[in-house]
Image (cartoon, rainbow, N blue to C red; front, side, top):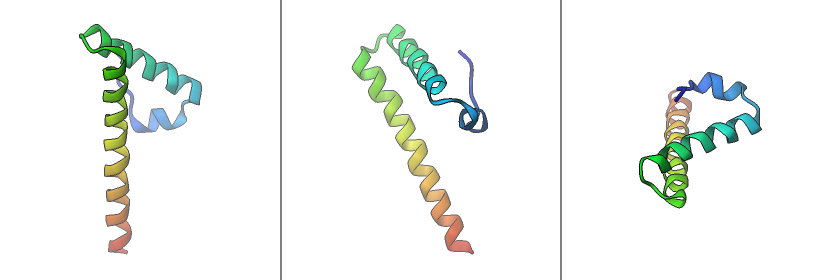
Length: 64
């Protein structure tokens, strides 16, 4: 499974991101998760990433 950097994903088309999310979800399913669990897991990881980025951005703005 290919690892992507944030810079790579920012340059990707929406449909390509969706395809990669599907591949990663299918991989989680192959490890024993059902489809809903795999989607929830992927969603949680994305939410964690978004939240930590927001906190980083807020902290960065406060230092200015």
